[in-house]
Length: 266
Image (cartoon, rainbow, N blue to C red):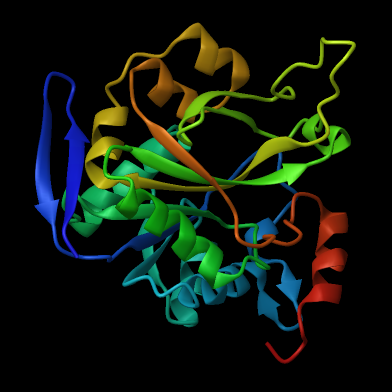
């Protein structure tokens, strides 16, 4: 299948033709001061959580899966169960800058589709990961893609939620930690909101450009990296996820919830 791929640099915009539906996955398992201790390696039915995440990624059909971490312990554990590991040396790198670092170390070309898969989402069905990659491959005019689920107003107001405003062509207009749109009208009630499921696909060339893009007050205030793309004229295509991603492990309490949903034999 022929696909026209757009890659932006700081000063130019060029296209190449890519004859493939191939994509890579990067599972980020970096230290976060807000995480509970040893989150990535917490035991779930005899396996570290990062292994369950890796196995979900394997079910997506990706041609390559890399676990990117700044923890030697996580790296050794991942290598023990057969994963390719890329060590992140610079702890100050943001999530997207870390992806660019991985793309460079792995030697991926600018047109390579890279899916950023959270290291705390062990219940995510493989087809969902493939869906976000396919979405970017199909929408050649997009620089990135994301999936969303429709959620209630109660969920849309959670601190960890990233809500999307999407135009009639499926492109993201804005992203916020607050519900979008804001409920102001008295004669119209918003019943559901588009909430990002935090699985994104990018072109590797875009990731390399990202590091040099100027920040804005908007992306810094919202603390959403993808807003830096929007503020610099990049296009993010959004589509509704074909299924739910399941419970993510944000807190230690979530571990027990996940254990109830993962079969012990997995």
